Image (tube, rainbow over all chains, first blue to last red; front, side, top):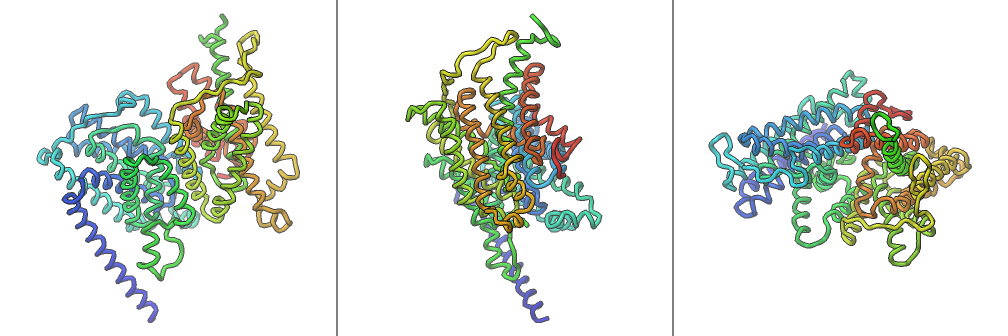
Length: 328
Length: 295
């Protein structure tokens, strides 16, 4: 009994600490544009949401997709095209991007969930490459140039997004809503079933869950949220290009998760911040980004599989819980 | 001029030859992937990078040391194989106890580094590698003109594929290898040095990729990006064939090369999509792959 209470106290303390950290993080993000270049933080926030959406699939369902650039970049194209060519308002463009990403996710997921493990990764990679070739050839993406000069417009007809601060707080709101949605999904009964699939798929099947349907649902949700991030990025930067649909982008989002901590709520966001920050620094130094990201990949896989947040969590917040913080 | 389905037969045969050449490389690379996966349970994302490394080593040997194509055919696979074995000893051997996905992620990082290094020093543009004088020129087959080097690539890749298949299916070393695939602990208990076998297997796979690279050097341009463009198609080939059998990997490789060539004749816009479309159809009808054993 006494052990149990000690455990409860520890848990209560760690929950309080977690809440305090979340509150601190939100306050820091609200204050950040007064100290740091807002465009830079907006880029971080878009990639952070992308990474968190990816984590919903890898961290909580145990599926490694190597094709998430399709949803991120695809949504950016849809949103940019709707806003520029049809004159849609930004909120409608972002919703269209999200919906388009969800449809793409439904199609890709439908094929990919037929196989498991490494095959799943290879199928998503191949289908994403197919989408990349489609984007290279389709006229609406404007090929190598991409869709340039996308107007930011006014949100709901009242908020002028050309004002940097307005744009920043809209992006922050989208990020927080997206992360809250992921948190809700992960901690719902549905999320528990996803985790059970990750831990032991056969047992989940024997308990009567139609595993395929849950996997597909998780895949579509992850794709839609990745699309939300991509479409928002298209509005912020006012362009959509091929870079966002390449396999390198799919690799980058995996790196963000691996570095921050797969299967932790905050890890992917931290990883995204670090990767974006690193790329920004390297861009001026002349040292090739691919070599740096490749090396971080190798180091993380060899000696740092829990990632930064996973490592912190394992050491301080949950000392009673054993085992790997990362993927099971 | 003879026509088939409204297409001149020369154009058809020409594209089929191009398809057969591409298929030769798909077959050699998916063969290497299957050999490595069979024993190590690792999908070698760096396979494309090793192929590029092979082509580049051949190119650098020629440009800096004046070492020609024929010695390079021996030296390049050796060099890439030794490099592969060093990587296996230093890093991959630490990942066997983990989820196979970590192997995929590690080799992905490795591919980025190898490619990044060559991009840094040689840019993204291609470097030509002249066809060796021995194999220059062409032969008139009566119905079409066959460049000698292309004929050589098809023959060489067939020899390599059949040789590897015989090595694995018919020799004592191959039988150890297949036994270790089934049950590594038991084979180790019989006194076979399984860790050494794993190292040699990765070395063999890497050497095959390197050989494919030097064979490809005179056909395609030698460029840092040549591997990553190819590896994703090869992954699709591997999904279609299933990695259960060595022979399946080889046959699927040639078949898809030919399918790609045919598509180029009848519907050129779809030629770089056709492999992925076939993959999707195979996943619908036979999820385990054409030659796959496990679902």
